[in-house]
Image (cartoon, rainbow, N blue to C red; front, side, top):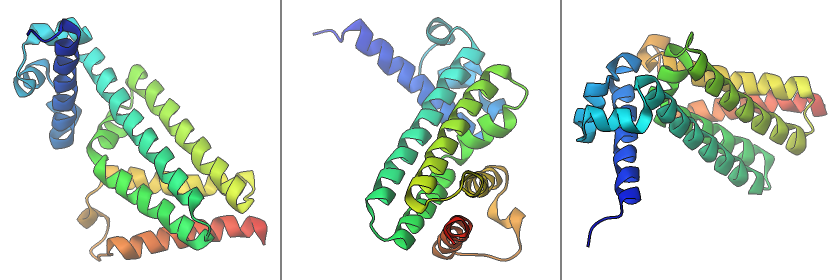
Length: 201
């Protein structure tokens, strides 16, 4: 029995997007060429042009997939944190999730949020995602901790700056010293807690 055309088309498109994200992880935006994606996805240049129009269309689709994944994972992390009755542990869950998401999605974040500056199409989707994440973080901090709008915004900016620095730099470029993942998560949780507890104090 032949595979339905729609299923084959979706599978081919998925392979192309997977290949694009793999290339972004390895070499950033400059590594993503139509030929490289087609070769890695085991498809043809013509198939890629047919599905995405051109390289710009492919990058927009890959960006949407990557940022949608980050948004979904962030929402799930906040649901877990919100279900935790202890505020200190809830903040630690938030810190763990943020560090994990920033680490696992480092390549796409660097490519789209940093290298994509100046590309109006990429910037528009970046902004939409950043604003959604900001509303999620700030809304939760205001609801859970009665943080003021300014303190909730400051806490979000701390998390965003951490994510941006992880996208831009390897750990060894940041400092000659080291800090373990658990110690860093504890420190991030304490920092966020200190900012939002100021509102309640």
